[in-house]
Length: 262
Ligand SMILES: Cc1cc2nc3c(=O)[nH]c(=O)nc-3n(C[C@H](O)[C@H](O)[C@H](O)COP(=O)(O)OP(=O)(O)OC[C@H]3O[C@@H](n4cnc5c(N)ncnc54)[C@H](O)[C@@H]3O)c2cc1C
Ligand code: FES
Image 1 (tube, helix red, strand yellow):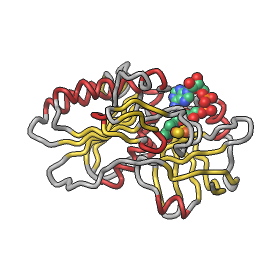
Image 2: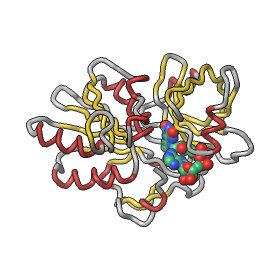
Image 3: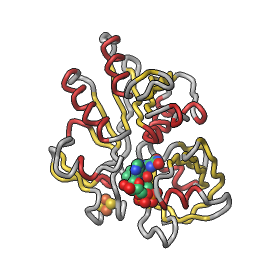
Image 4: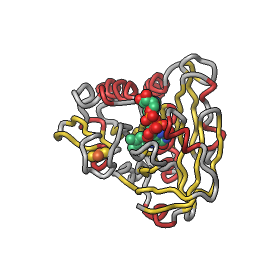
């Protein structure tokens, strides 16, 4: 546990916020896909997990959406306040590859873009597909417009960008680029992983890594709040993940779908 100072609370768009924390220790050790576990105050008791969205020198960023009391209270924090943070926690993306002939695809649903922003800035190459329900939830280009990465927006109602889900766009992209080799990094709702699982049957050669978001207690592997079924036995998302290779997950497993909150 360490007390870290909030440097900035940045309203992005409607219910979306970025928070910048000063923490040389966490910044130095963070890898894309890892998360921090924040104690907000005693009215929310349990800590709340958030992916590390970016690291800049001695500062880290998180990107979040207000969905309940904890995230609301977090959005009301001010610069210079101190906050109790555990991290970086978990196992992030296994991304160190030779990308000369390999195109990374970053597939984010809603606020699931957060860990992929950090990851894509490390890889500095590829395409980024950001899916939302409607244009009111499209905010990515306000915070992220890097060189070398092409961003595609999808909305389910077609109010901005491609009409359909991020995975619908992905299917077309893969079909139109059969000569290329891909690796997919994804973070989004459980339905996205079900669809990716179907896609992986058509393209078994493509490696797919997914970052899971589950209800968490301790965040360090000491309780079983985040247990999940895999073909390698029951795993803890906070310690063995949150990033898993899609092929090890029992997508329809007892401990999978029912406990996913996205
Ligand atoms: C490893 C990990 C990384 C995460 N990274 C991020 C991140 O980068 N940005 C981010 O915004 N969130 C992230 N989350 C989710 C985030 O932890 C929750 O949104 C947060 O804990 C909700 O706290 P709360 O007190 O506001 O909501 P609660 O009061 O706990 O819940 C309020 C209501 O919202 C529902 N709910 C809770 N979380 C979500 C959600 N994420 N989406 C939709 N409905 C929800 C609950 O089922 C409940 O009905 C991550 C979760 C995990 C496990
Ligand atoms: S949250 Fe306690 S084991 Fe994962």
